[in-house]
Every structure is written in C-alpha cells, then in structure tokens.
Image 1 (spheres, rainbow, N blue to C red):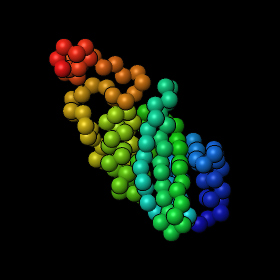
Image 2 (tube, rainbow, N blue to C red; image 1 turned 180 degrees about the vertical axis):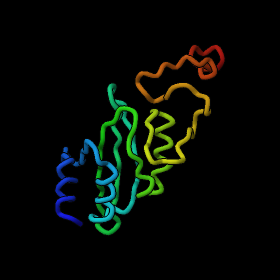
Image 3 (cartoon, one colour; image 1 turned 120 degrees about the vertical axis):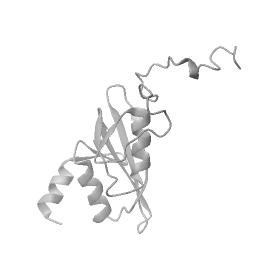
Length: 144
C-alpha cells in the first residue's frame, strides 16, 4: 500500500469511542480494513435516523484477530455500496433502501425487500407518516 494513500484514508477518519467515523471515502476505508487490517467479515450494516441525516453503522469482524470494528458514516440520501467488497452487504443495503430510502451507489440489485414495489415512503424514517388503512387493523381495537 502506498503511504500517501494510507495517509489520505486515515485523514478522513475520526475515532469516536470504539467507532471509526468517516465523512467520505467509505468504500476506500472498508477496502483498507479488509485488505490491510484483516477485517474479513461484514457482520451487519445498521441504519439510524438522526432526524436530518441517516447514520450507517458497519460492523466488521476479523476472524484472524477475533476483533470487531465499527465504522460509521452520516448520509442524507445516498451512500457508496460496499457490495463489491462484501457480497453479503447486498441484503443489508436492500433492507436499508427499503426502510430508510438510502440509495447505495454501485449496488446494481437495489430493490424493496419487505414493502411492495409501489409503496410510497420509507417506514423507518422519522418523517414517515403512516396513513395507510391497510396497516390500521389494530389501532383502535375495533378490528382485533
């Protein structure tokens, strides 16, 4: 690995408790963690709606060192896909797209998993308004 490239990757990261926070270059950082630091397994990608942005948290694991690494990035509407680095990321990226509306650039198979294709909105976003009567079967106890 080129030292200047390493410096530029590290420069874009902040260590926050036990979590590495990146502002951009997510793909490069994940690739570096996998190829250079042996974090060879993606356990999960989690999304949290913070109100004005979505935080994506990547939980990586090193089988060799038996260590976890948490990687975080805050996004508005899109993020870089890491499905070419970890093929298992496709499922998590699809779920986050379906529930939060984050478009993962580079994931050619992005689709809804749980909601119908014609569903409007993203149910786990704080600004989502649930006004579909098909889901109100137990709101007032009448249809229970």
